[in-house]
Length: 86
Image (cartoon, rainbow, N blue to C red; front, side):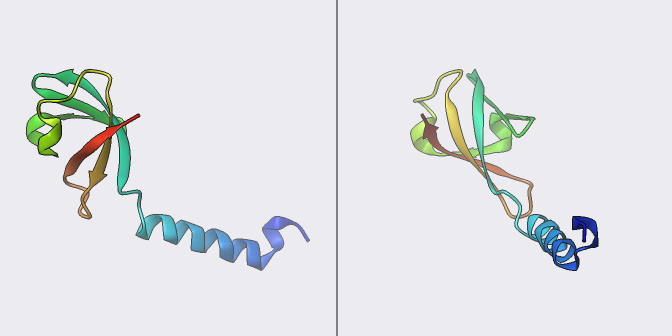
């Protein structure tokens, strides 16, 4: 029996696909590409300062090329810059 003929492998693939659709990644590592105003590249998207919520501790303590933890809202419409990561 090949993998294609194995019903358990087929079922596992269906479950994995559904899990990925229903539980998308909600956190990303972004990179600050502009300092004033803040511009962050995350998941192939460039976000300007007015498009993200920023932890108040980062407003004055960031630099170009800093890596930052970004959270995505459940509706996938907003990002939050949480902290720097190293």
